[in-house]
Image 1 (cartoon, one colour):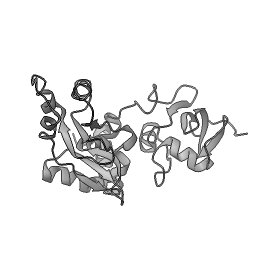
Image 2 (cartoon, rainbow, N blue to C red):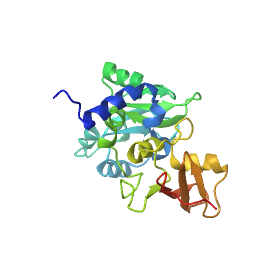
Image 3 (cartoon, rainbow, N blue to C red):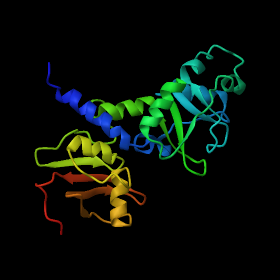
Length: 243
């Protein structure tokens, strides 16, 4: 077929766009990284491993600021039958953690993963502080975009409702919202909806408020003392007046 399907065309467009995307745009932020602390008891460590949803975990030993290695959960669970299990047994399974600087282009990081047969790196700032975690799968998801996007941080409804509104979580990534709802929210600053709104308001709201950003009216529905939790977005060209 000499015509390229919409599915494949979008993947190709995302591939070209990867040149402008940084690991910071696709990483799991530090606040959402699950870390295994080997200073805890063996029973607590095993309980975490048995209920873990990840294949690999960053590991620390009492100091959450210092990652000492990456642990394969599958290999760790193979130790279950050892009646004399100790912390050193887990440390013997650790792989060296790979740290990459914030601002690394995802294409460069993908090449690193392929060249070194790695699938996980920790993103750090200029002071060596961990900002997030990026995996090979994160980059692949960015490549194929909406076809694998998880809606866990977006909304229970993945599209505009009939009344032209969309209820989004404050943690929703702006890049995902742009892709999902065909918006043009700015990507040169904050990366989440909460961050964008707080930058615009220059404060955490203490009452319900509506604002307009990039031709999108945003009504803050839920917030707390730290962040904006839920926002109602209005589709451009079908928006209410802001009073």
